[in-house]
Image (spheres, one colour):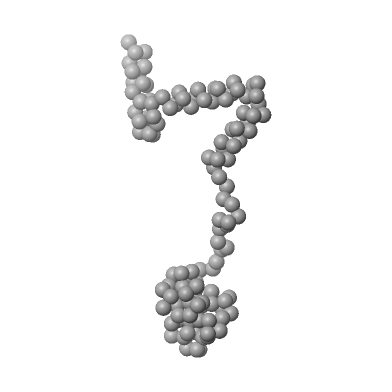
Length: 129
């Protein structure tokens, strides 16, 4: 009788764990069968099987390309205004280009373009308000 009770409890435990983990019934057997078939197929056709497995792994975990390079690290500015002025200092703009520079740099500093324009005009004119 203890063996039957053990079997019933383990079956219930496994069913509850797979349900909690979101595993479909039978998917474990399907996965196990797929692995066994790939192992059997590797014996007569190793190069093509391994090439297919390599393509599958690369498709499942793509590597980011050069167009999605991470942003370079930057030193945190004390405020949005300080960040804007730091970006503008790299821009080397003149007073005539403040409006265009403000529209371009405001999102990078987390400001509205009007606020950025006000800060930049004040900076260029020499006041530090």
